[in-house]
Image (cartoon, rainbow, N blue to C red; front, side, top):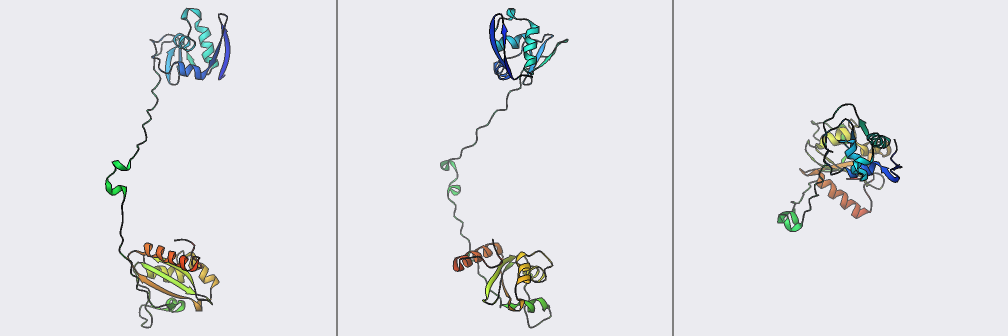
Length: 237
């Protein structure tokens, strides 16, 4: 198959290319079928019609074998021996314009929308030692274990008593007792604290809130603003 070439017909040189054939037949309806048909971009045309339209030739000035030869060299499917039902090229899919929204045409509440959120009040627990929580039970009157409610928690420790982690939880008891301290569930900061810190210096406090994600984000922001860096084992909200 050749994508383009030149040929001589009746003393004149013609440039043949697939693109030229496709473009020439773009808006042409096929005539009634003959024994010799060519398929172009899904449409079927009599070879003589397609050749005359493509090169602007009088149909009496060329032969069917010559036209078949040119189309075959260009890689188009040429059939013969029986009449085919003529088939026009499928119309290309119509491109719909992308919608353009103008602020003046939008409802006013979608142009400017102010959301006022109620304040989040965090009533922090006492800072309990890591080991006290790890060894505590529901029957232990000397310690209040984290409640099974959503909230946020803060872990401090080390020689300089720095903030090691600030996190959120859908269930504070599970997150702190099972994941952070016991390692029974994934907890990146908990794993690093258990590996790198003197747990005798680590303490934990928590606060219940039904908006733990928003509270965690604000606590992180305040910590970075105040200290210039994230908590030691927290890198993102």
